[in-house]
Image (cartoon, rainbow, N blue to C red; front, side, top):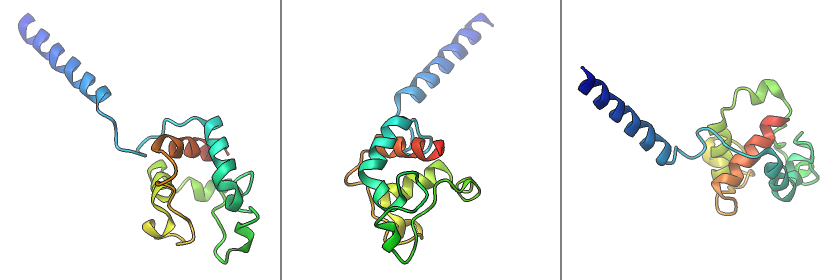
Length: 123
């Protein structure tokens, strides 16, 4: 029995080690930094989404389809972090939203996108 227990313990330890060593699917659960996300937001997103994320940025006011209001808790609670990751990385058109929302995957790293998601979730 002791041999079986130690084999089970080794298998469990290997499984946990592999889980921690293998990167998880991008965007699945952001490990973002809210303060860093605020900086990325100010540099890239605020033009359309506004300084407070209300969708009232100067460029956003000119758009026929208004940018998302990230402070709308009812609407934002329906979007998973993975949904947010995909729309930021791939653009609105790629996920059935406004084609005017650009894809940021070519400019922002996955970590920066997760940082923005952490900022959005703090609103």
